[in-house]
Image (cartoon, rainbow, N blue to C red; front, side, top):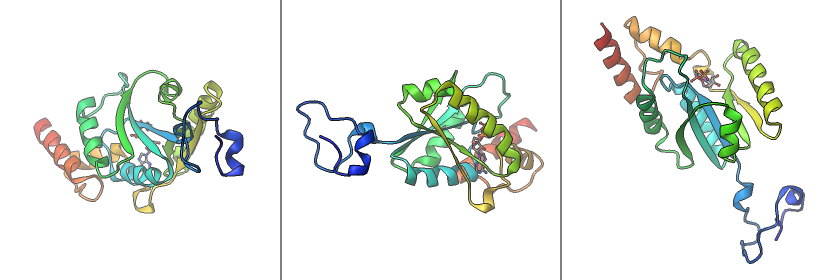
Length: 191
Ligand code: ADP
């Protein structure tokens, strides 16, 4: 059975014999899975803004925390995963995972067709472009999609949030409340 939408027939695989999908209902192969990779050390309101926007565009969104032994993170992987899970709890089609190695390999394993990245300012663009083109070279059928956060978050980075907190500034509007409490506790224990 093919889709009832004639424009989509080119890319929809016939269902296996004996499978009776309701007419017009997309088969699971048609679901667009996107991966949003990053360090999330910690997750900020900018990340959450992007995740909320993307959750409306894609069928399933996997927020994937990169296990990167070279970086010196403030939070452990477990802490970052917990904070992310708390932040995405209201979004039914968003899940949190970790990965190591090549992102495109991980995406292939997850059957994801989209890699999502955020662009805040022109300064992000050059690095993101390089990475997107390299990923395309490695796995041409996976597309990188760039999204913009709300303007209010376009200056926001995990790095800046940590710096402001360490210097005693308010980070209330910059991160989810549970993250704010955790950063405060970290800063306190390191002083
Ligand atoms: P990475 O180490 O991969 O840059 P980050 O956690 O810093 O990990 O960022 C993950 C992704 O989220 C990147 O694409 C980054 O550009 C994007 N991002 C970070 N902060 C914001 C923000 N305030 N608004 C939108 N996108 C953001």
